[in-house]
Image (tube, rainbow, N blue to C red; front, side, top):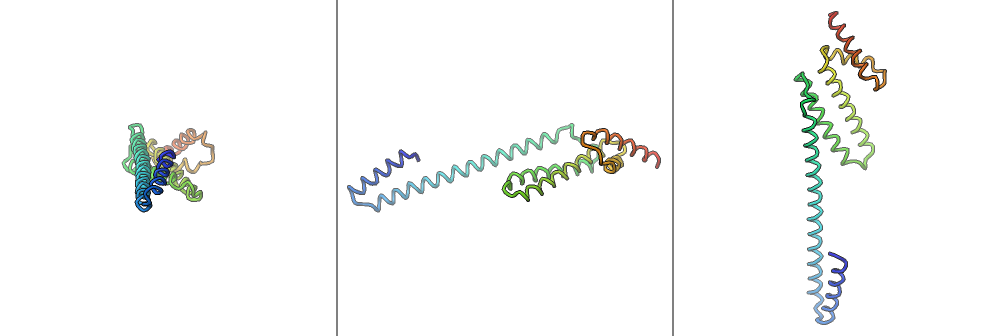
Length: 169
């Protein structure tokens, strides 16, 4: 209700009280108006929350569809299952991050967990794309001293070492 309508209501109530002397009925009328206003406010608030929730759900669904695109297909069945599971956990963690922004310690733990899962998914993708599989990952992790900018070179070197070790066995 606008301020103007509130003023008109107050004026009408004052006039009615003065002229009729029935303050109880006017009080009941004002209470009914306030109750109606409260109910409408609550309904609009609930509707707004539902719209935000639906929008987040739609965004999450779209994000999942984009992540499931054919360029992200993994060769190994076990790798696909693990990668998919990790992606679901990452999505859940991101949802939690948005809900607990006022708790810095919880937020930092959630971010750490997300980073660990992202790193694990990267290792799964390396193993899946390499002919030497997890041996490449083992070599890659042993030589984890270089910067991220040298990452591609480190992967190729790890794969070469893993293939040599595989041929030697």
